[in-house]
Image 1: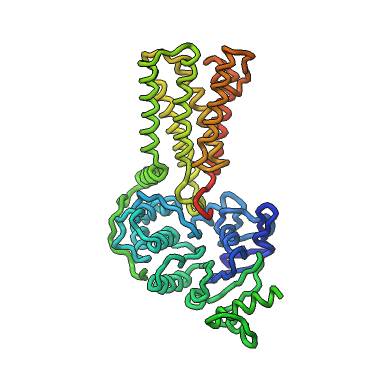
Image 2: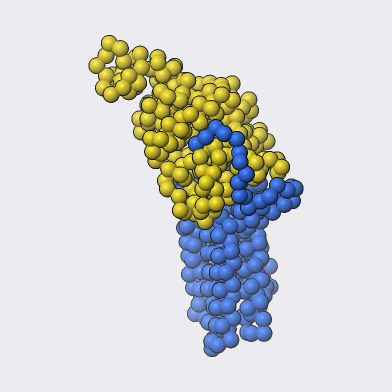
Length: 248
Length: 222
């Protein structure tokens, strides 16, 4: 398993953002659904080794991120796109992706080709020389994804990756996710249930810091049967039904 | 977005050895921290000090306060460069980032101290080069500590606040009772060992904290 979480809790002051989450994930795309404030972003940040858990145990890529040496190994095989990606506007697309490739300690001989491949893979080959300041919001999201996949990560963490993408880009991105999920563990936090239905083999639903459902998208959709849950699509109705059940 | 392979793309770095790649990484890091602009600002501070020394008529009181203002300017500039535009994805990378932060802080501090000391050459710089080195290092350390605690954009608060305290401490030397603690090092003589140790400790603490932890993230959502 590339991700193993055992009773993981994260507090910010008196607020418990993640409350005893236990889960495992192997290769494939796992969708992390949940309302605002459910704890998805905090869970992803812990998996990205950016913040430590307040309690519980995390193992990523078979290693313990609590130790410096093992954390370093994990980070070499990690890709992470946060909800709000920062960028230096005077970098070109290639410079931005190259900077992350070098920081991730890729072998020098591979950097040039890997940067080119990542930029092509997110469909920005014709914008390779463009300054980031000149790109649209959707293009910047794709640049962020390029930096995350440049090292061909074994564990890829994406927080709301389709926000700002137009429908055509979103469809292409789902195809990319499915492709990446063939070899790596991809965890995608999203509000958009259609992303989950189209790209994720497994789904986990969070509410108030806990995982309240885990299964396949079809199983989630099936939870709406026999209920009057709100939603325009089966997955949305399943999502609403599970939340209504745990909150009742 | 495509699944296709890579075609040849323009890149700033041709394939090369580890040394060339290391230089390329350093170049990109320095550019992202706006270090060229910071060096220009440091040079402007030095030119300002030079002009003030050559063309101003300073009393003994004002002559000791004057360099402090330009040293504070340099410290604020150095601390501001610690802000990362990338946020958490940059922190979730390998081992090089702490060394890049350390190198950036040391190089800029050395440049600032050197430029300010050079600005005083041949002019009456109260306290001399030793004073400039001590005060610049100490003020920069405060700025770095502030950047670690508050983030790069607010890093000016520490040096600016300390400047007020130091100016007042210098004032008390003429209008007692004098403040004499070595932690207010600008008010002590250049050869005062206690003041040099205090300034050195603050600088070392600031540099170490910035190298290990970096400036507090201020990218939205981080």
